[in-house]
Amino acid sequence: MTENGIELVDIIYWYLKGLVMSIKLLSTEVSSKIAAGEVIERPASVVKELIENSLDANANNISIEIVDGGIALIRITDDGIGIESKEVELAFKRYSTSKISNIDSLNNISTLGFRGEALASISSVSKLTLTTRSKVSEYGTKILLDNGLIKKTETIGAPIGTSIAVENLFHDFPARKKFLRSAKSEFLKIKPIVTKYSLAFPEVKFSLSHNEKISFQSPGSKRVRDVISPIYNNEISNSLLEIDPLNLEQSDDSINISGLISPPSLTYSNRSHITYFVNRRWIQSPSLNFALEQAYKGFLKDSRHPLAIINISVPNNTIDVNVHPSKTEIRFQNEELIFSCVQRVIRNTLLTKSSVPSAYVTSDQGKKPNYLMAPLSNTRLENHHFNNETLSDEFPPTNPSESPHHKLFPILHVIGQLQKTYIVTEGPDGMYLIDQHAAHERILLEDLSNRMMSSSENAQSLLEPLTISLTTEQENILSKHSSELSQIGFEIDPFGSNNHILRAIPQTLELASAEEELHFTLNEMLLERNTPQVMRRALSSIACHSAIRAGDNLSIESMRKLIEQLEKCVEPHTCAHGRPTTIHINKNSLDTQFGRT
Ligand code: ADP
Ligand code: MG
Image 1 (cartoon, helix red, strand yellow):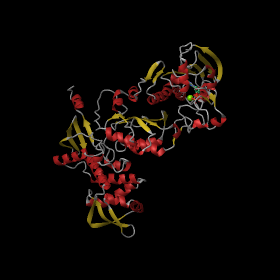
Image 2: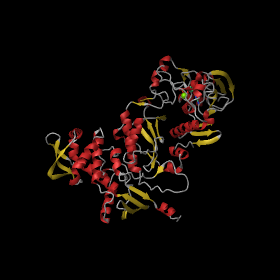
Image 3: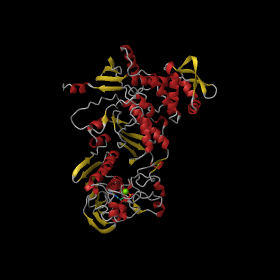
Image 4: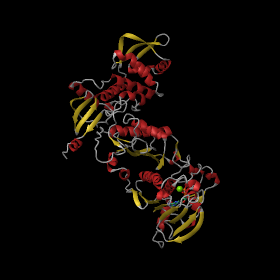
């Protein structure tokens, strides 16, 4: 045993686990392959680099102290593996790193850092003090640098781990200092970095303070949900849906996707609550945003966005993290597969776990939250035709009998009709209001697609075929998708220049509107490029125009039938365009409103 109580076997164990790494200067062959180094732009970039270093050092506790938005002081203290005394000065040389050594390791990076640049860059524009003690050293080392020059190195007593204080950032660099904002807004850029990393590393305890006041703490409990509570609140944390593990039938078992997503009832006006981690690296990706949005199609209105924390894990040698200076973009070897997996697991989670949205009961007390825990407001349906296209990408929707999920739609008892628009029903916990048009549209949509899948007849032949004329664009889409259109129920034959004969129309449509509807459907189809989406447009359009409308009087019996059919739908909660079909007002909120509780 050494003097400070460390067993020799521990040291050997740490070496074998790679927990003791030695810092080396990268050869120019390697350093020239490194994507242009990031310039330290503002306090938040310092915080990001230092947190990444602490995480790479296997820290369990990371404390981040900020004074005046980080312009006066950023101090990050960890209990990680520390740096050996003899390597402390080397750590501040550009391209010195313990994390990679040769070209091959650049293709298989498992750490957050790898360029050996951050300490060099940060110390060159600040006054920096680093105190560190490695797990295998008996003493600690303290080093002081000013604008990149080493002022002092000394041996001192210190706990295992590393503490770095960065003071007077850009003090002698007025040109860069002038781009800094107020202390408050610099801190607002720091906080999300800390919260994002605490979501990626829920087993690590993070603590963030600003001007000596605690701003955020994560419990280090390993559960992502426990990190959500201090960032948002308990209600939001409890409402999130856990992503179901991937069904691996058709995919590669080296891909793993986990995380939490918001139910359709919890939405935001922007994408800032969407976070992706790939092998625990926080990345930004428009393509993943697209996959996520596709998964939520039909569950959200286009202008709203979910909360999502998505962890993707893939073998390190199948991604390239060395593509962007800030390391926030990566390249996947098999991009399409990853995106389709993300889309599938999220879609599946929504289909199996989301329930009827609750009514958003406004109250006069308190501030309105910046999120909506509610169904979306009613937009006139006509608007949706042009802006929205919101059906499942599993086209056509799966047959209800084949999908064991979705029994989250309650059994409802019809009470009556409200304003010739809504069906009032009673369910397991209070009142459920159903938008008669939205519900019928959903039913017809699934019916149409099921018939298409099972090659059942969708068409009704016209006794007197109609002669119609089409634009060149409409003709093009017609010839491209004639077989799909006939599956939907439109049978159309050419008849001279620009003219066509319409012989059959979808069963659900009325004869009087058939021609107009064909034009409308073809125009809708023109808005999409790929076949599944073109067909989804067509089906939604026909379902919408065939459905009962707001203003139609319904008998109790026909309302009952409608509800029964809705219960059987695969995706009963939304119409073809993403509006909710059903809103739930639970008994509790009624009791509260009436002052019974
Ligand atoms: P990189 O992280 O790309 O290797 P840095 O300049 O950020 O480059 O750090 C240089 C080296 O200093 C790291 O490779 C690591 O060995 C060491 N180091 C930096 N911060 C810490 C820390 N908090 N704990 C342990 N070692 C650290
Ligand atoms: Mg680093």
